[in-house]
Image (cartoon, rainbow, N blue to C red):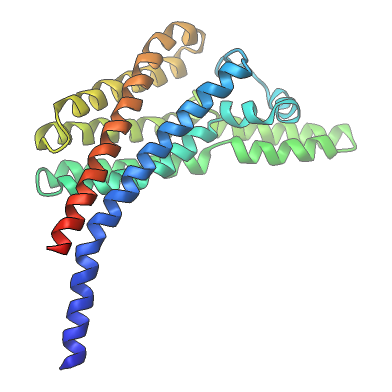
Amino acid sequence: MLLRRRSRVVRTEAADTSPKVLYKTGGTAALTSVLLVLLDILVSAVLPRGEVQPGAQSAVDWFALFRDDVYYAFRDLGLLNVLNLILGIPIFLALYAVHRRIDEALAALALVLFLFGGAVYVSNNAAVPMFVLSGEHTAASTEAERAALAAAGEAILARGADFTPGSLVGFVLPSVAQIAISLVMLRGGAFGRPTAYFGILGFSLLLAFTVWTTLVPDALGVAMLLAVPGGLLVVAWNVLVARKLFRLARASGKQQEA
């Protein structure tokens, strides 16, 4: 009997603690995402490099870039997007926990779309495979080996290089999920209308930028007119989401103490 009571107490304490931990983790992930963006902006300002037109570089060009400037090679092949999608998992779980009683269907759909789309993007991303092939290409001793590695690199780029048709699904689904969860936030009111509108507009602009640049690579320069304000709005969205999640974590902790 005593063991049963202790078991119930442990389960109750775990249930009381889990929202606080989830909100804290989500808030930390949102701030980390912002820091990654700011770090990329800082590096780009200190070590500027022109934008790469989508689909314009061959596998051999990417191998050379990995040898000469590994940071920009990883960056231009979307490693920052991979990290942000991974950080988005605890953010979405926390947002689902907050809104599941407001619009569970749309919140759950947003979570599923984000997880599925993120998995598609991460599994197809070309950054790490191209880095490995770059090392093998450098070490290759014959033209036949280099040609085979270049062909393998082209196949990887066709499947997962950013702003190419192969990566479009992995881009679009998380973006749709982010717009959907922002719509849920607008209905719920817990995060405030400005936060929700920042998310709806910011993620919509980035989605339009992605689709436009993928379908019309030559329009990259013009499409940046959508990407810049969209990116700023998303940064603001992450900051506001993090602030609110930390407040919810503190409130959850006080309720537990009470």
